[in-house]
Amino acid sequence: MTGQHPVLHKVLLVEDDPADIDLINGMLSNIAGYSFEIMLAGSLQQARKLINENDFELVLIDLTLPDAKGTVCIERMLEIKSGLPLVALGGVDDQEAALTVVRHGAQDYLVKGMNDKKQIMRSICFAIERKKVERGLGYIERHDGLTGLVNRSLFMERLNRAIVRANRDKIQVAIMFIDLDRFKHINDTLGHNAGDTLLQEVATRLERCTREQDTVARFGGDEFTILLEGVNHANDAVIVANKIIRFISYPIRIHDQELYVTPSIGITMYPDDADSVEQLMKHADSAMYRAKEEGRNGFQFYTDGMNRESEERMELESRLRQAMHKREFQLFYQPKINIRNGEMIGAEALIRWNQPDLGMVSPAKFIPLAEENGLINSIGEWVIREACSQMQEWNMTGMDPIRVAVNLSPRQLYQQDLADMILDTALEYSIVPRNIELEITESLLMDDTEASITTLKKLKEWGMHVSIDDFGTGYCSLAYLKRFPIETLKIDRSFVMDITTDPDDAAICSAIIALGHKLRLNVTAEGIETSEQLEFLKQQGCDEAQGFYFSKPLPAAEFTDFFVRHKIGKLKALHGTVRKFRKSA
Ligand code: C2E
Ligand code: MG
Ligand code: MG
Image (cartoon, rainbow, N blue to C red):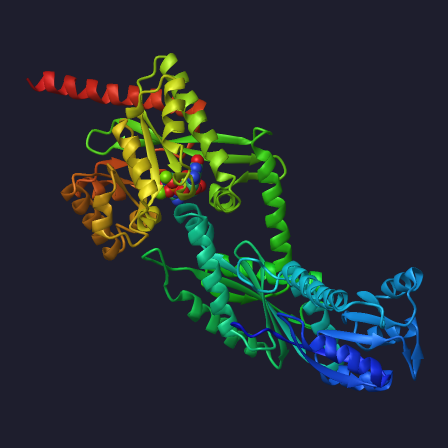
């Protein structure tokens, strides 16, 4: 802050005529709001020396110097330092001369002895201000408005220069590509303001992890890049990466909430990994994706082969974008059985993507991708619609109504109108809300946001059934569990798998069943493949069962057959019991 003191502007006066020097000095000494520190050069040669040693805001230059005349003076000055603000001082009052001078790069042309003070002042101040604005514009164009970090274009420019230097000095350059895990999620749930604050905080922390000569840039969205110059060994990058992981992981306080974000970092080295900047950036991006796949909050160096994977991923993404209108999705249904009486009580709808070139793509592969790029919302909507339409068809053929479960991904829960959309769709197909079940994963509960609780409460009030999927894999506390309007816990398949061989898993399953019942919840076990597993769960009082033991997920028509056969099987069994009962009576 300057307070009342005017800013001191450093000006170079290139002039060899003592009378003119006095004249200009006098004028500059009393311009209100400006004060000048004036240095004098009597020739171009002297000027060159001073310019190289000082940082002038303005140069006033006479056009008749001992070592140059006319526009040559301007040209020479700009050769010494391009972008230097120049005001030329000429002897002739000639419009043409003035224009020529300005065309050569001067800001203005003043005729010595002919201008009044006011005019000179204006010219000088304008020249300074104009340069300031130009520099400001340059700054804005090359920096990120939110974080103040270097932006993508300046980063690329610096990377190019770093490569030239690296070639010359035979040194290495490391490039880091950083993506914040779960950032989109925070942005979706807490709003853009919180997201912005978070990005600013991350930017500050990243700068603290790096040295003066390194470049930290915001590449776009929640992506940051770092250029480490003069690296001796890949290990130098490891040190920085570890520091970043540590620094970013400290909780960030926003609106009285403690947020945790973690970075996934991809690293490439020049000249080892690639020789063009484009390739280097691409590799760093691929390595970052691998870091994400490896469980986030970590870093990965680029290795050969990652590129192919990232190309495959991009290919998959572009095909996924077309899948909807090409009608490549299909729902399969897997029966859910009441363990006590063996009756079928419902089914879980599981999406299938039948991609002509790739065959069946597993939802475990494309659902995470769809969550990342936002396609999940439209896919999710399609799933609800398709499930409702199928239920209507079953109803019309006279099949007993069953409860159909659809999986909701966390991201869908932040869609404001999700509850209304589901209810509207159900009504459109005349489906009783009671017959709709929604499976949400445990991780969603841990994020515990008011918006998703509100949505779930609405769904429950309307009679829909809410279940916690993959229960036991997250770290959901019981206190959280109580806050959510849920009816069912689904024990994750990974525990069920080993219940008959691993006592720990058996203990976990028993505990979940007991816990669920204490909280008056229904408990479902998924992934049952053997009669032993089923028997164990039955003994423990588990309510519902699902798994290959009963049936794999089936296309709708096959599911209908299964339903009918299962029903007949049950009837026969019942018949048998009645006959036995009669005989013994
Ligand atoms: P999930 O909701 O936990 O679904 C159960 C998964 O276990 C299904 O895999 C199912 O085929 C499989 N499974 C069922 N019984 C057995 C068994 O006895 N043994 C074994 N080994 N596996 C069994 P799927 O269909 O590949 O789905 C994987 C995950 O993808 C689902 O896990 C769910 O999280 C997600 N998903 C599937 N469909 C949708 C959908 O429509 N929307 C969303 N958001 N996610 C979906
Ligand atoms: Mg499920
Ligand atoms: Mg599950």
